[in-house]
Image (cartoon, rainbow, N blue to C red; front, side, top):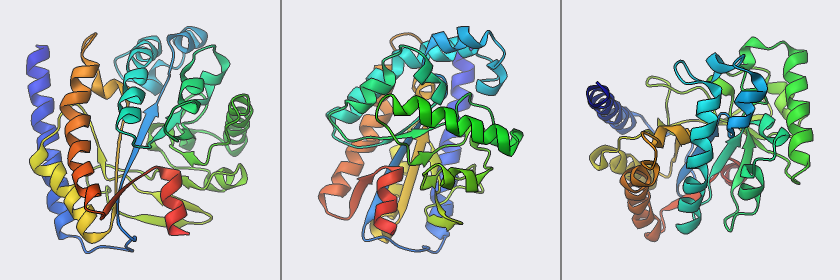
Length: 286
């Protein structure tokens, strides 16, 4: 049953990659950069099994339709160090969008990210991982206050924001709290290769949700489009997207991330592609 489900998922992923390549090949480039850019953001929805225990199952459905918050936290505790190790080894900076509630626990994730040998962008992913569209202005402001207070303990002032469930709302509040960019709402017809200013913030728009399936025929060609046309290509994923069974994460990192970034490295060596975070790419646009 699991094997059948995976095969269906792989076929859908390959179809999605083909559709993205087809769409990006036809679209006329919007505002171009000095060079192409590969941007990566990683959504840490929970970060620790303990958070699931603290919330006592009340937040399960805002995290995953099948897995409990505890289980997602457990998976992320196993996968995040391996993902960080990978990006540190290849010396590529990425955006880690961290759930603010993680700062309540003694989990080492935030400290580990901030002490990395590579200057990663540590952004925010809500406090309780509640969709901001479901929050009143006062509730959203409270969450942003809690994030600022929690991250302050680690000497972090987040500049990038990834909305839980990718539901965009309360943008003026983000600016008030010092954020300069967010990841817009993606999905097949909405994904794109652009950055646009919305009010006082920048939408570093998503280009592709990267999962456990990677086809070099399609995604490598999208990276080529980014380099050739000097456009931003923003890939994103959850740590759990690289997890299938215990011990499988490193295999999937090599099968997906290593192959993808190896091709991007080749383009970068030709000096027409750079690796950027959500925060750093804004510095190129301002």
